[in-house]
Amino acid sequence: MWRGILGKKIGMTQFFTEDGRRVGVTVVQAGPCPILQLKTREADGYDAYQLGFDDRKENRANKPQKGHAGKVGAKAKRFIREIRLREPASGLEPGKIMTVENWADVSEVQVSARSKGKGFQGVIKRHGFHGLRATHGVKTHHRIPGSSGSLTPARVVKGHPNPGHMGCDWVTQKGLKLAKVIPEKNLLLIQGSVPGPAGGYVVVRPAQPFVS
Image 1 (cartoon, rainbow, N blue to C red):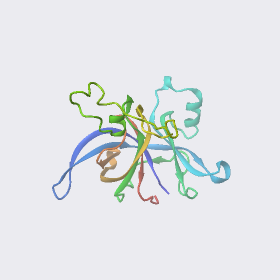
Image 2: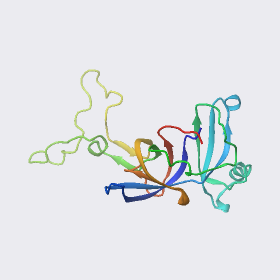
Image 3: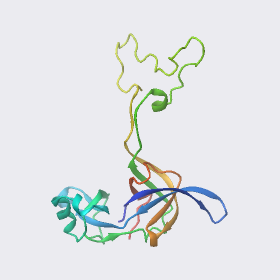
Image 4: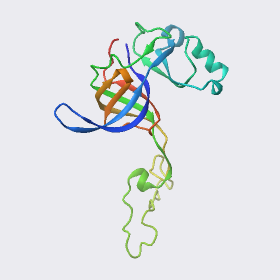
């Protein structure tokens, strides 16, 4: 059961559908990804296959990285992730190369990636607070969070929206339509935006897993 592939976000462009509509799409280079390892329920407690994407430079890879990938005749990879399976893998073996050739019938995907880091942000950008009126008498306090507690329980309740670090989280965007598959160039055109910056690594999964 094929449940996902690794790739890299190239950027955004526009795509014209068959009925002439213009839609914005994100270009993702998906694969080729060699299967570096198979996890089984008997040995590891769960079923999964481990993929690698984007070769490391020879002088940037250490011996464990080279040895792990070398077991299947591959080079050390920069991005390695496991794809969980609900049942034991059939038709999959270490060293097999995964591509998007059999993704033609996929209509909807979900993409996981590391979101863009925003640094330390206030409550207006981080949580969507409206703030105070920027008029006479408010001075420079129109972006402050305001009161964050009360006499009871005389403390700030856990989970209260406050300023803090924003972004740089592993997030998943679901319900994205797959506009086009270009297997000869290992490209997926995904309608809309996906998490992360251009050049960032992503994990693309079909909304409904399919058998290879």
